[in-house]
Image (cartoon, helix red, strand yellow):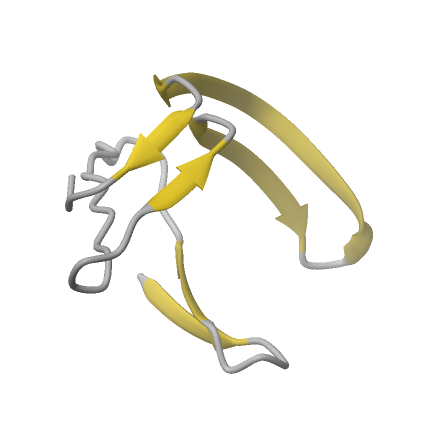
Length: 80
């Protein structure tokens, strides 16, 4: 299931909902404007699995938290 959210700055983010037994996969693309560069403090990819109970939305159970550094601090000058 894919859910699109807009925040106050009109930035969109996709929220995916997975069910038990489903595989999770994907890719990361960083696209720069033409002839631009971006300095960054490292790029980290995080996967967080949470369960929110319908009858108790104040309690969130985190069952997995994976993190991977995919780029050391530096400068991007082209799409990756």
